[in-house]
Length: 191
Image (cartoon, rainbow, N blue to C red; front, side, top):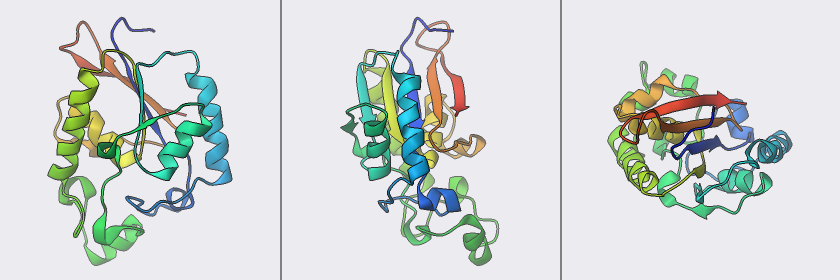
């Protein structure tokens, strides 16, 4: 169902070698796999019929390339970068848990990287910009940051990003219900 209010279309980048293997990919610039490139091209068909006031991307190659292959020219927004995993960059969750039992990104953040509050502050800046964009905005970024952004859009704590999950090359839609004082989640993790 179409909305009378602006919609924010969130797109997680296509598959990379690290995303396929479960490695935390924050600031490392890992290219899309062939499968990731094909999925990005198919995104274009799904998004072509909608008009956008703005198209924004994380600075990462994987997000920018996903936008490009989907047929969009995106403005790079540094605040859309994936979490800085610091000492956990390139590690899988199971490897981190061997060293730090009970660890949770959305509760504990990352040593030598970003805290939950840091990621939440970036998400708050993006939400503020989205609310004044004046129309539909298409956003290309990475899973953990988009989950944090969604939590903040809904007025939840940044840590509540843990409640959402995103597959590669998925499309999610944020919007409003009765008026623009009622932000909501319209669709989630569509692949």
